[in-house]
Amino acid sequence: MKIATEPVGSIPRPAYLIEAMGSFAKGQIKEKELSALTEKAIRETLHLFEQTGSPVVTDGEQSKPSFATYPIHGLKQLAPGGVVIPFADGHTRQLPKLTAGPFHYQTYANSYFEKAKKLTQLPVKQAVISSSAISLLYPQEGIPGYSREQFIKDLINEAEADIRRCLNAGAYNVQIDFTEARLAIKLDPSKGLLKMFIDLNNQVLDRFTEAEQKKIGVHTCPGGDHDSTHSADISYTELLPLLFELHVGNFYLEYAAEKDKTSALKAIKEFSKPNQKIFIGVTNVLDPRVETPQEVCDLIVEASKFIPISRLGTTDDCGFSPFADDTSTARETAFAKITARIQGTQLAEKKLGN
Image (cartoon, rainbow, N blue to C red):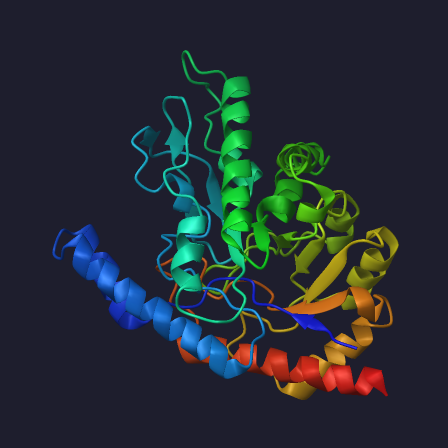
């Protein structure tokens, strides 16, 4: 028996990299200097991942401006004033809005993967942003000469290319970040918006073969930024029946921070499909306290009563620092939690194997 365990993605950047990013934005250092410090941070991140015993690693998203906006970083046809995402603690994030077409990604995620691949012998997974999140860039008032229908066609092509380039480059698997799923229900309790998001993502996923879909996964959580969330008040039982309609083989579900874990497990059991592998979050990335391996083990053992071991995996609830400026979690804490996840998963393997 082997219980798979994987990270979600982002790791807090070292202080020197955050400082360098700020200096570069102000024009105080050259791109070459920033690139050297970014590669140093990636190398250190992968080394620390290896020390945890993690069987699968990521680059920690050290060079991404954020998990959501990397494809559009540097895009000229953008203006401020896009969709606002409010968090429970009162802070907000705001997307830009598109001003002209045609729409194309400026950066594809394989560029991050290929740098990381050269710096480790371990399998590297790669996170990409969902097409539904990027669809929010199109303004409600429309764009003269560039219809929403044409934008969606361009977006689907770009989202497919983002995933396919990673798979073709040799990524262990590709994880689509779909953190707006619960938020969609909060914005539209009828679930019409969520259904539209899932349909859009499936239009991308249906361009891949069944074998390729097994190497693609979806991550969902109630948002995690500066130790706050945007949609934790939306019950998992509202989301999961529709989430499992996505045409992927792996689901990375925030779980450790869930207040009603039993209802979540019952929904997973009822609505997930036999060909879907469920990675439950066993470390709460919003809590500075580091879980013990035994606590992690206990979560897994309880989940195994609802999810067959052959389909059960473990992960972290969310990325530890999805936005480059999020310093709410210490780098050391993130790796301590990852170590606890791996050791707790090993404990659960032994307990459930007896």
